[in-house]
Length: 130
Image (cartoon, rainbow, N blue to C red; front, side):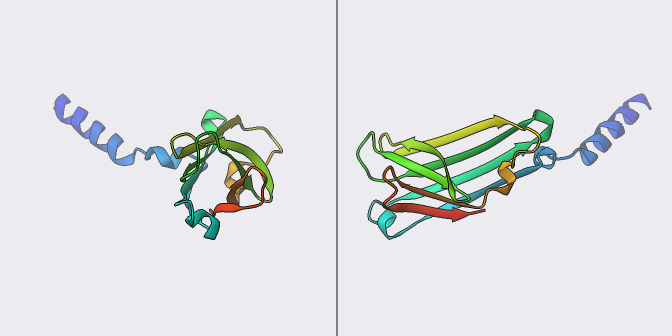
């Protein structure tokens, strides 16, 4: 009888357990599409946002792949403003920003368009939106 009770308890806890993603206030990803300039460099990319209130952390990341020389600097923009730079090595680059949640600040959940340009901001290689 006790064994049956334990089995039923475990089964019910498993059935009602929330998946890990349900804890997050927001989690999203989007593919970044190559522009005409980006197509010439075989550019591709992915952007992700994640906010977990329980951890008091929010993360924004951009991963890119493009055929440019090592050390090439790229600029990343969201919602009309710059957020960071990427240095490409072996055709790959990544920007990973993780900051604490603070009252009054916009969260990563409100990020709209994302685009990646050359350092001089004269050519846009990738663009996407959540």
